[in-house]
Image (cartoon, rainbow over all chains, first blue to last red; front, side, top):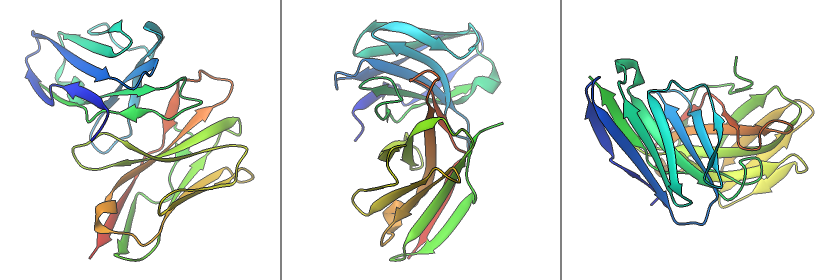
Length: 114
Length: 114
């Protein structure tokens, strides 16, 4: 079982809805990440938080809004999404920057936008 | 385009055989590499990593080889089992860039036949 927990496992939302994805880790990791993965494709980086501060935003549309309430939690707030945003959203954490230690992934939230 | 790629998108092996999954990278400044296994419905699972000051690293039934001369990375799985069936991704971190940005290869689907 993964040590990074994501909820919900599945989410279906309409284009006018507001929803949030949640991620939690208790490994003491100080870097946390959001990735997006389309079917049969590799994960693509969206956001990186380092010591609870946003350090990287990969030009993600503003309809995705990340939040890091504390060192163990990471949220992704969703609003006015498009059907093409349907994907697997993965959360990950690492002990330090990804250049020095591996990322540990959760099992993702399967998002469907109708 | 992606700088981390794979020679074969699919690999089919017999149970008990050894598997070799290959990955090419184009950035000679990359200094840290990771192999991930992703089973259907799950997030990527860390298998093994290697830094650029090493040529080989072994884990349990897995070996990663790094050839910096030709910018090639491989994952060898000994005595492949049905449970090894999954998509395998290599990922690189590029020195000089953000320590937090891992670039994933396209992935290889490994199928183990009983």
